[in-house]
Length: 133
View 1 (cartoon, rainbow, N blue to C red):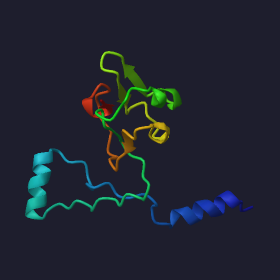
View 2: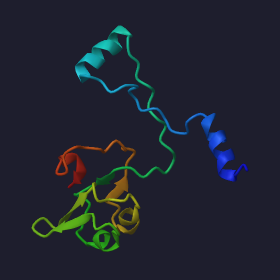
View 3: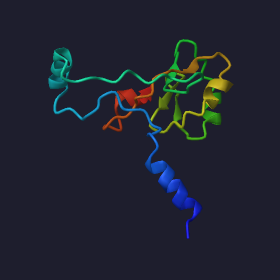
């Protein structure tokens, strides 16, 4: 007896993938070798994915504008923001951030905003790419 799930499985079997292809088709042995292949025309890089309007990427922090009010710390549900008392500034841990944009919305001086940067993966948890100061 056919079930709705069976029909859905058959439909998905013949459908195109909904995801975008990553910029490089196959994982390269070496980045330099890949760049050489691209120059020779042996390899292709897919065009970048269009970023949708109002995309919430990596947080950008303008430390000169910041007044140290700590409102962003109070509203952050992921507790990704810490206060540095010596400098009266904040530090944002991107690896904890859930990109909800609440800190941006509450900031009275607009020193926080979301960028279009989305390739944030890193093998080092303490990488400087994952900390915004």
